[in-house]
Length: 232
Image (cartoon, rainbow, N blue to C red; front, side, top):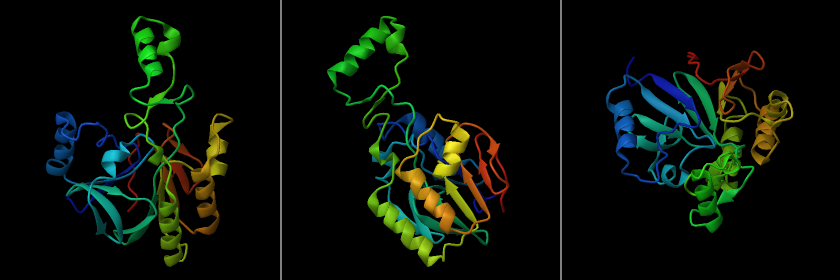
């Protein structure tokens, strides 16, 4: 393999997560991917990304679409873009809703959050088992696309005649999202939008992550987790 080969991660990359941009461990792994691995790392965003930092990286045009350049060979494939790789077209639209926030989203300085931490530290399991996140620490509203990202998506698909080889997302269109959820998941604005894309767009394969499993929904629509497959 060479840097002209691409490994694509379908969201929740984890390489840009710390609130400290100088985090030594994070820099080590990003430099390792860029300097030691014989391929270029590409990723779409999931619901677990530090969007404050991710969106602070420089944007450049690459292979027909826009990317955030994390390192020269570590690139974030931005939402609503179409990339030309190895003679094929790849449409990317990351993002998803968190499903582990039943007990709320707190600000970092919220007194209630501090109380929860104290009670959990004392061993109270009802506090240890709470499912919540902290704004701008472990949750970001940018997990769902902005109006501008939706508009750019529509524009780029229209330019492509609603015809691509691969669609890469983190979550699924509503119909498939609800099918595999078996009552556990709810539709949202993004899954509904992806449903429109599924209806309007011709594609050979649709790949997504998010669901922490490997599952072939249909011959052309697949959920990936740990499995690595060659597509070109």
